Amino acid sequence: TYARLYRNLFATLGNKVGHWAMYKLSLELNFVNYILPSGGVSGISYFSIRARSEGVSAAKATLAQITKLFLLFVSYQPLLILGVFFLALRGHTNNLIMVIASSLITLLIVGTLLGIYIIESRRRISNFLTFITKILNRLVGLVQSRRTEAINIARAQAAFEELHDNYMVFKKNWRALQKPFVYTMVANLTEIAALYVVYVAFGQYVNIGAVILAYAVANFAGLISVLPAGIGIYEGLMTAVLVATGIPAGLSISVTIMFRILTMFCQLPPGYYFYQKAVREGLGKKV
Image 1: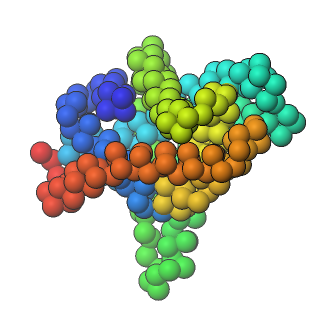
Image 2: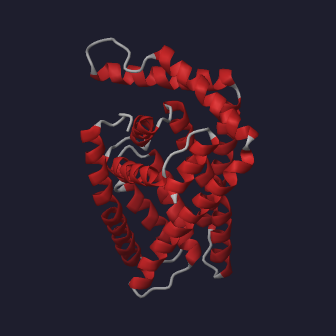
């Protein structure tokens, strides 16, 4: 699904990339996001480097990652509303659940509007990302004794301007995002269905609304966690939300851990293989 999504995004930006190449890169990206502790930043950086081998610039690759996250957020909003509806239908809602759901929906809407506001202006996106770059350079400077820039500001600003230009391409061709939006919706539904199937395997048919809400909370927390794959935080928050909806704690933690193990088992081995192959061949080398 994500391979098709990236292909569509790159095609809109003027780059044709093969499906097999994007499939391998998507698996590599999953591996990097699981293993490296950075809250997803390592994955974005890795994707930008690897995309060079397909003739895609770093700015276009970064925008593709940002657009994917944006579409994931937007596509999850109706699912969240549907989840709350299913919980209310079975009388499983309470004040805590409503606060969690409304907070997530608010964060999604505010975050989406704020992101669009920043990237709409060449000046705003340059100032914002330059500020972030300077902070990263300072953090690196605390670790390294030398006072050189880890990230060259001038080069970064040039990439930021290209990022804005590519965004304007999406803005003019917004209908081209319809298929990527469908792909993100399918990806979200597939993940929720997989989690629910684990409950069924345990012999429990729980409220689907609880699964939708717990999955959303865990993934948003994992997105900002600096721990690899949000380990500990992901499982803890998902279990807490499920328990708040009336699902027993023992069942919730067992299903959550089993779901994580199955997900990693399916994604990490092929991702590791293609990652190691890419490292041997040269990450950004044109093929």
